[in-house]
Every structure is written in structure tokens, then in C-alpha cells.
Amino acid sequence: MAKSSGKGKHERAKRTSAASSAASSSPIERVFAGAMETALRLGWRRAALADIADAAGMSLAELHANFADKGAILRGLVDYADRKVLEGTPKKIDTETSPRDRLFDVLMRRFDALRPYREGLAAVAREGGGIGAPGGVGDVICGAQRMLRSLAWMLEAAGIGSGGWAGSARVKGLGIVYAATFAAWLRDETEDMSQTMAALDRNLARAERLVSTFSFRRAKGTGETPAGSPA
Image 1 (spheres, rainbow, N blue to C red):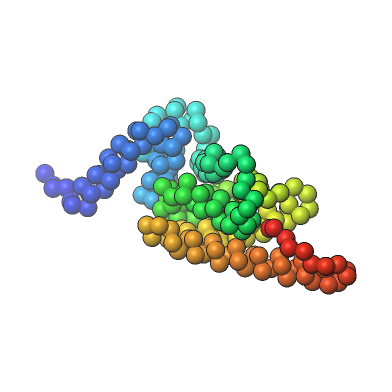
Image 2 (image 1 turned 90 degrees about the horizontal axis):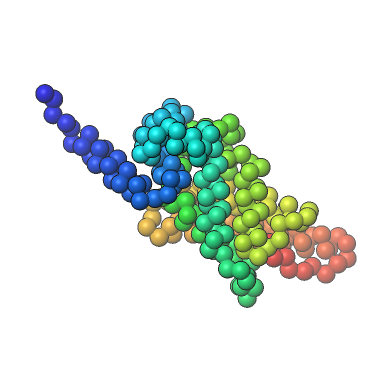
């Protein structure tokens, strides 16, 4: 009888450990963990729903009760990140801190919520999302419009309005910031996510300078006095 290779034993040990960890999580989190483990092992496009159910330690019927297809799992992961951030948002926003600092905190909490699934999401990203997304990192987890709706909630969590024309512009601007930072986060293997924090700080600073420049030019052209803009 052929001996098991060391690599094979290691892979089985990792899967056993993952299954044990998943068993203590909610069914939804078990699906996310199973889906990301499967994306790493087989590739997202090759992964079947039966593979994900097996990795999550549940039947196909149990998986179907929570998600209709693979795209729904990715969309559910976006909703999960939204919920985690909003649950940690105080009822009263600390307006003593700058909008930029509040956005930094909100987005880092979002990355922290997704951190257990980072390697799997990187595998999904390499295949362009697998749900009809154009392939850019901003569309990795879900469609662009869904991502913008999600980011509107992130603005609200930071105490920055997302309604009206100005709010729509803020959401789209934040989308650019998030997409660029998300790409850096996928590659960040530091324990404290220092590379992600540096990228986010840099991207927010660029956005802030762009808004300030735009506000100044608009004021200069209309004879108004330029005023600071929070987003």
C-alpha cells in the first residue's frame, strides 16, 4: 500500500483544522470559510457547490437554505462585512475627529472583518470574481453597483452623508479609494495589516487633495470663498 506523502498529511491536517474551526462558527460563516478554502484548493470557477458544502461540513440542502448559488455567497460576504462594520459603529459619531480619520477607521474595520477570508478572496480575484464581474479589483466580490451601495453605508458609518448629488460623488470617490486599497490588502501578509493601513492612508490623502483642489477651482471660477469639504 502506498504511503501518504507529507504534503498530503499537511493538507488533510489543514482541512481538519479548518473544519473544526468552522464547526464553532455560524452556518453562514461556515459557508464563507468553506467557499474560500475551496477557492484556494480548486479555483473559484472550478469549485462546485457540492465542494463548498463539503468544505463547510454541511449538506447541499443546508447550503441551499442559505445561498442560491456561488455568486450569492460572494454577495453575502459583502453584506457580512457591512453588518460587522455597522454593528461596531457607535450611535453617536465622534465629530471631534476628522472625516478622513473616521473613514480610515471604518474601512480598516471592514478589512479586519474580511481578514479570515483574505487568501480565498485573493484566489477569487485572480479569476475576476467568477460572477460576471469585469475583473477589476473593485468588482471582485460583487457587481460595481452593489459595491457602491455598500460604500454608501461605510460613509454613513463615518458620519458623512451619502445622499444627493454630493453624496453620490463621495460614494464614487470612495469606490476608487477602496478598490486601490483592496488590491494592496489582498497582498498584505503583515500581522498588523501595516501595508494596508499605509495604502489606505495614502489613498485617502490623495482623495482629500483632489477634493480640495476641485473645491478651490470651483470657488475661484464663481467668486466664492473656498470652504473645507469633509469628504
